[in-house]
View 1 (cartoon, rainbow, N blue to C red):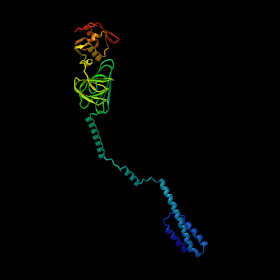
View 2: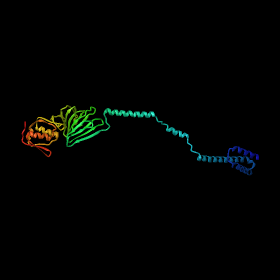
View 3: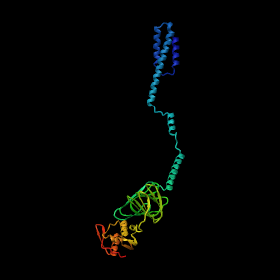
View 4: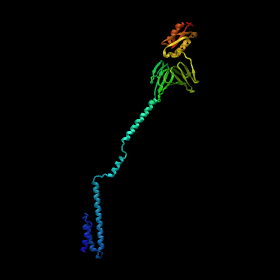
Length: 343
C-alpha cells in the first residue's frame, strides 16, 4: 500500500512538476488518508482514480485562476499597444491619393489658357465687361457734351440723350429733342440713334437729328447714314445735304432752310428771303416767341448775314431796316409799325 501511495505521488509530482500551486500536496494527503479509512481494499483502484481526477481538476482550476489574475494585472499596468496592422491601413488610406505636382501644373496651365482664350474673344469682338450708360439733359440753354467714345454732341434746349456702350461694343443713343452729332469714327463699333419713329446707324459722321412725338427729322452734314423705319422696316441711305422726315407713314424727303443749324453755328445768311421765313428760322433755332402786329411786314424780303446771331440782335436790325418798333413783353418779342419794305 505504501508502494501504491508512493507511485501515485510520483505520478502527480511528475504531472504537475511545473505548477507553483502549493496547497495541492496537503489536499492530496487528506484525500488519500480519507480514502484508506472508508474504502475497502477492493475499491482502492477506483478511489485512486477518483482522487487523481479531483486533484487534477483542482489543479487546473487553480492554474486558470492564477493565469486570469496575471492577465488582469498585465492589462492594467502594461502600456497601450498600437496594432501595427491598423496603423498601416490608416497610413495607406492617407497615402492612397498622393499629390501629383505634374497634374497640378497641368490644371494651372489649362486655366491660364482658357483665360487667355476668353480675353482674346473679348478683344476680337470689342466686348466690354459691363454696359456703360450716361444721361445728359439740357433745360434752358444749349449744352455741349463729349461722350465716352470721344464723340461730341450739341443739345438744343429741352433735349435729352441717353448714351450706352453695350456688351457687344455698340454705341447706342436714345434721343428726345434736337441734337447735333459729330460722331467719332470707329467702323467696328456702330453708332446707333433711336428716335420715336426711326433708327439711325452711322460709323463716323456729323448730322442733325430731332425726335419728337409726331416725327423724326434728320439732316446729314457729312459721311453716310442708314435710316430704318421702325414700323415698316424700310431702310434708306442718304448723302450729305439731304433732309428727311420720318413719321408713321414712312421716310419722306424734305426741303429745309440752309440756316437750320444756326442754333449751333450762330450764323444766319439770307438772299432775297421773306421776313416770314427769317422769323421761322428764329423760332426753330432759338425757340423765340415773336409777334408781328402788321402781317404785311412778313412779305418783305431781306438780304444779309448775321454772325453770332441771337433773336434780339436779328430782330433789332430788322426793325431798323423796316422802320418798325421792337419791344419785349413777357419773353415775347413784339414788332409794331406800318409796312415799309426797304426793297
